[in-house]
Length: 307
Image 1 (cartoon, one colour):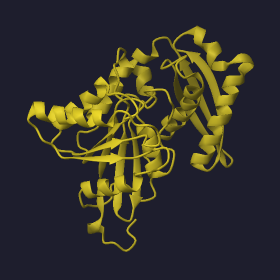
Image 2: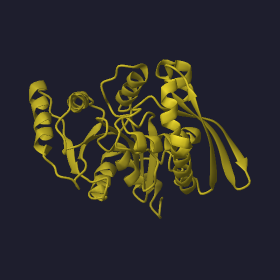
Image 3: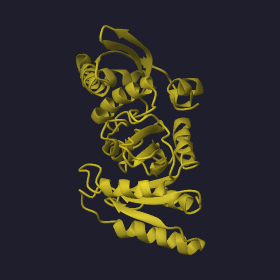
């Protein structure tokens, strides 16, 4: 990372990615670090854990927190996700609010702006994502921020950035702004480290992502994956995992006709994991009914959703 630069010239800091659900935070993070560290789907609220990804280069190191998307929560897991997202900005150097100008302003967008308006310890960067698509609501987001500033009598400087996580447009400019915003200091993690996300949770998320892409809203958030064991065998891993669902009636959907969906998920997840970890991965998956798992704090702790 140093490339001959003295340690004291490095800029290193923590960037919290926050925003409404399904605005593209995980896609943006994966684009920045040029690796898959956070799951992506078209279904909102797929990110349930706070993912820490690390971008290291000659200028220094940016440590990104990819938080769960804020949403209206009516169950224990949803409330935990919202609490995690709100807590992420505490102690970070930059709060990076990701917005989606292809859609109208949501209450959650306004909620984040109100919170960030009073977060004096953070530099603020507002990212207009999805520039590869038609924008209709850019001015609505800018007008909302101005209105909130006027109403509160608080004026906070904001860097407004335009990007496309899909194509990579604007990413270099965004990184320049972020490096300018973080302090000079030593790296927080080893240069070669990409994420400190626990391996078992990362593997579980990849399996869950495959189901989200197929099922979409059919079983929106009743599904979780728990990795029970990872065994070294030869030059690869054998991973034993349970797919948890809330009701017996969901079991047939998860398995699919004659087991086709379960086999498809297994095959696609294994390919992703082998690419991520550079070794052969074999998944052993079982579907189990755990009624009310989203309110079971013991299970939520096993799944890594709470400390």
